[in-house]
Image 1 (cartoon, protein in one colour):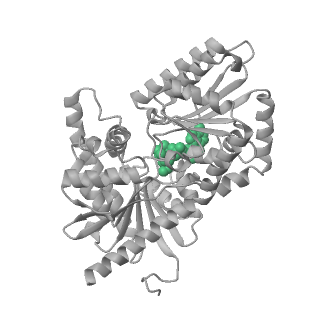
Image 2 (cartoon, protein in one colour):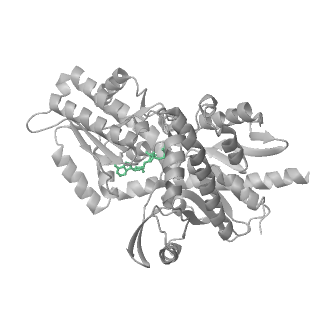
Length: 489
Ligand code: ADQ
């Protein structure tokens, strides 16, 4: 055993997130096929050699029967995943309701739902009850699998009650919580009916992490103003108990992208794209189709750019790849129609018989196609109205070794704090400013592009996802050791 109480064997890390990093498809009564989805968090933790990670979460499917649940549990175990089974009603109230209809818009400054306030208030109560119930179900599964010495790392706004539920089971459990979205100004958080309960539940964790110092500061302010607790440089204190609060900006597995550019299928894609768009500059947007991504604003800015720069018409193309999400929610359906309408109008105005200025795809791309697109892009456009970090901007930078393209980045994305010096920062609400930034990016000298690119490339390749995960977990270990020392004194 080492001085800090950790043993030399790899520490077990229980990663708890709403969704497991797998897609599960039922093939028969007791058979499942599974595919690991290589999101940022998965590759972050695969790259961390110091810990042995296990995943706990919902598999994204409703499995009402015991035979199916047993078979899925067994199949998932091979992938080091442990399922939490949620029934349809809980998913509706907890996930679609409280998480995606209340917390997600609120944390991105879009406010609480406006329609029919009374109905919202009533359903708010039942959705909040379902949220607590779901968090308790996650806690039950964590508790069942927890062994002394494990570290439990809870993720995101879906699981704000989890630290409290876990500490009620076992106050010695090492619990960290990390938020992937922004944490809004305390003035916004104050409007949430369950504001205090949520803050108290999160504060049960030993370590609370955010992408940026601003989000951490907002959280501490919310705790001091709403709960009357004390904010210190270390975090939040209440009656001698400290919850450490800090910023841990996430990164990507940059090596994975850099290596991908060398492989044959990606090079084939790159060639095809270069041939298709020969003679034109390529601009790129890659987003989930969500209101927070500012896709209509991006399109309007591109339209204004074409209006004002007639010499660029026909010489530049915007590829907008938008993966549909939450497609059963009316607001997202409205957004899809709005985007289609704007794209149609712009293509109608500025297209020719043989070429259109915007190629819009409503779908996800596989990894080789995505890397190839990043590599052939001259200007990437990220216009999020709010975004916890925005990994698309990191991925673009990682793939730009050859072109040294320009990143236009919203100042409301967390990434603006890390890539701000290399990117052109814009306020996405200011269409004129974004249109001017597009002109500036397209006309930028190779020297300036190279300087800006190196700034960002160095950041993206040194502040990786692996480093992020390691830093969070070792900080969590240290926080617990320090707290024990403080108690002994
Ligand atoms: P997201 O809102 O999903 O994540 P982002 O950080 O940009 O946003 O990550 C999106 C991921 O999905 C990227 O890895 C990207 O490659 C992929 N993706 C997006 N569109 C795609 C498409 N059309 N085809 C294929 N892949 C696509 C949340 C927060 C962010 C925060 C992350 C991580 O909202 O602010 O940066 O978590 O903490």
